[in-house]
Image (tube, rainbow, N blue to C red; front, side, top):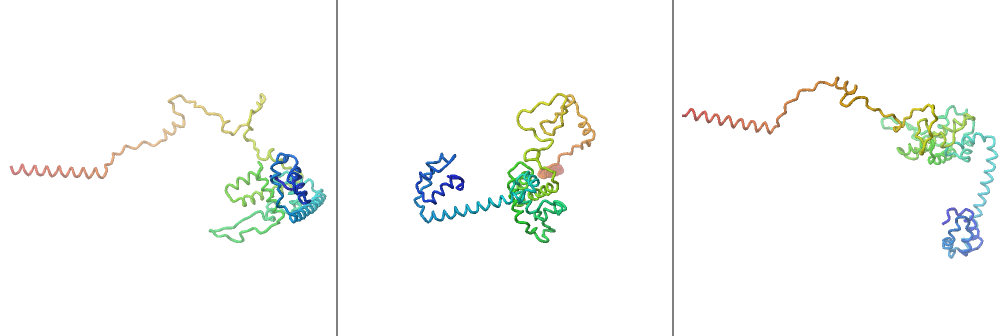
Length: 313
């Protein structure tokens, strides 16, 4: 009925319940915006026949706790923004990475800093963060520890959140995660994609002048990408055209020989073909051989009997 009870309309209804209001129609009239179209359904849902004074006291305590922590979060956020002012350039660089927002960028810089000279290469940073799992195996037996150890939990949480967010975007990290998730468990694909994202972070922080293009501009496009759907603009006369690798754009090779004429490749194959072997006589089956031998024996016995009769005569 209400997607967010901590929104403006939901919070007003909760405050009214904690103050002692029990009339469903009065509570439903506190709805605002698109929720005004659900007045009748809200009146049925806000039946407070079961809501007692004890429930109202507990609800008031919960709302007070929510207000207290919300105030603390706002004050801490303002303090972090003041402390992050010297590194606004680095924050903008990391904010351009798909899946990483301003808060995630602040978490990453707060854990690894902006001085990448302490890490000789990007693999050193990835190894320090324990995002490069490796298993040594020989003859079916695993050697050494099968885990990389526990890294920085705050950096790991920020990278995991960034990878999950980037997995839904048409960017390099998103494409890598979806490709790996098809052939391995999702947790392994998440770690492998986080490895790549941490490598990108190292490259950006090591060069303050480098800027990553925004997602969807030129991040995944290549020189031979498929053209967008719809009518394409015609090139100006005299403009050189680049060769295309699309199957539909390849020139069709038409035969240059006349009907009945062999091509050069067919002539070479016919010239190099080995001579045909002579036809072998058909072999008689075993049953045919038995029948032939039996018929020959009967014929020989009949000739022998006829010769004996002539001798008697």
